[in-house]
Image (cartoon, rainbow, N blue to C red; front, side, top):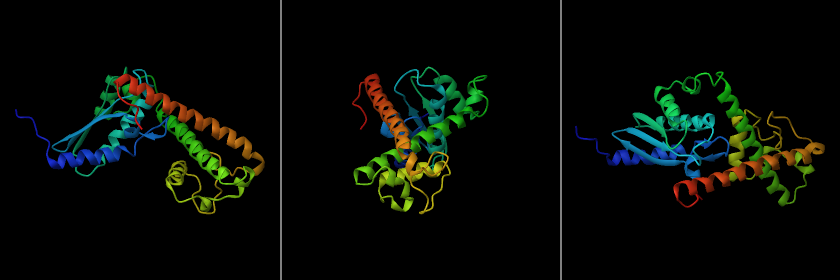
Length: 237
């Protein structure tokens, strides 16, 4: 049987799938999989897409490895013109279970029988989203303080005071994911539950935000270095 040959349309679909994967984030690092170097290859033949993922270490946690792979599968499947999607996680201790679970579309609990209670992955996703929100908010707060605002003065700012740039857009996105108030008059600095942070509590809030931001940025740097070492490549930008 002659193997199918990829066409110009398939090549265009490969680029479309890659763009779709830009919307899939490592839940712990809050960065897109392609930017982290986690997408090893995307191929499309006759409309059938295969996405191969790789991670910094053999022992990356199975639960959020599954989250990333499942999110990648959904993103690729949503690309117009893609007929089918196969996501393959390679070089990972739980690759067989994860890949089989994705292929059968049975979910994490079925792939790892006895290791989940049906809600663990969504709880994990929510935890990472709260951390991503805090880190994005912290970056904006630090910019505003560098521009002359006092920490206490941040309590009086609203979403309408945000600059119209990429960082602010990403913050709005993380905020919306948690269902927090998005009106222009909503307070800028809030807790992950959406509660306004008052001036008297701002220093404490900034300490928490700084710890979360440093942790995420440190982990991201470590993962980039481990991935580059593992595969003998330059660190992703």
